[in-house]
Image (cartoon, rainbow, N blue to C red; front, side):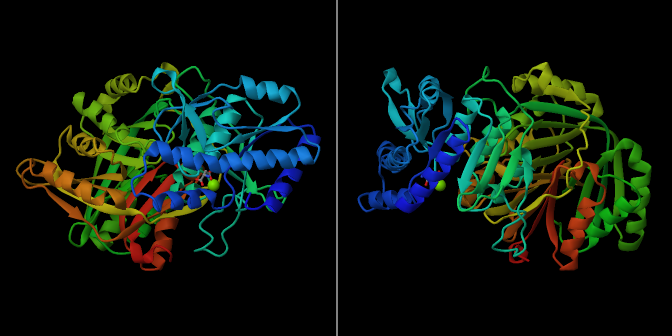
Length: 562
Ligand code: ASP
Ligand code: MG
């Protein structure tokens, strides 16, 4: 809505849709760069404005848009009425500047629709009920209009929610870096969330979380043309009974996959091409690999660990031996393993979820053999004998009911692509804690120490390598946001001083490159192809972490765009 001309064009488009028989609620953002300009004005007065006054200020941007757009609609003879967030009944928590939506009291909106009006609602804002019922204007955080729109769509059980924006939809990768990036026709919300940086450039991630949780069909398209854009699909369909719109527990599922085996290659050379060699040969041998984990290197050697279904163990070992005979290193394996995973939208964005999973396992005296994380999932590999106990205790901690807990889930192969999109994340650093005790509680202590200060770890990798020190020790590597760097380092130093012989290591500057696709679990050889593409460019892989639908490689910053 950058100009009056645009507002008129948008009104025309709304009128056409209305004339085609649709009932419409339209959520708008501020005109052009209004929100930035308002922020600028405030900064000319103070560097510490109160969050309340900032919300008061910024919410005016959307109020300008709703009134002008409504006038334009009425001028075209299309009946419309504007509502602020408060008037529309958008109830949020009271955290100014980053409020989450609790519920939307839709009676007024519904009445107006019944009167044949298009309801134009200010995005990005809501109202908190405040102490003693005193209402306050809140905002949802920058880019929050998307979230307003999807939340309203969910509350009204709308047929769909269309987001009109200035890009044609979701592209397979960043078009500024890759010239032939393609528009995706379809993507699932889970894939979109896993493609974190790529997805966030198009939609507010909280909007995608709501769409996923409530099974809303979301379409992203350009407001400049009439093309179809990208449809985001989701198969979840939660009712409103439990928690608010954005206030449900971030964990909505728990699963245990049994009969897994872990294979570890240790002391293999740390150079480009080794991972490619290994996973190509596994796929040649017909082995479908699940999790892959490589923590930061040790001098000039590496460990690569992966999991497979136990019945594939012999074939996998045979392929590994072929490689080791050529490049050196050792192979070990462990049968009778189970993979326990929690999942839910935005798990990794919320400090404390991963740590309470680890804490629960440690309280249950269960050692975690491997950890693999993605945006929507945290998986731990544990000894099979503890599987059921882990399931019970973790289920209880996250208050999951029987329907949310599955053992050996059968996932359907819907012929989805093995890789749908590629995202490059540049705002992370890599950190390793070395020689930490290999016993229940270590991972949870590390994560909860950081979580207490609201620092969340992104890619957490715990490899198989054990150090033959007096007591058994291990290394854990992870990435975290550049912003959290100094505080995280301080907290970790302090923690590690309690574990004798352990040390903190910050790696070279890195980026994360992630390939995501729902078909990945059903396709052999995807990892091999990804690693080969890197090897062909002589790019060394510093860490590998995977989930079912994502393969993430941490590589040196200088190779990111290449
Ligand atoms: N106007 C707000 C912002 O610029 C909300 C939005 O655009 O979605 O962040
Ligand atoms: Mg915006």
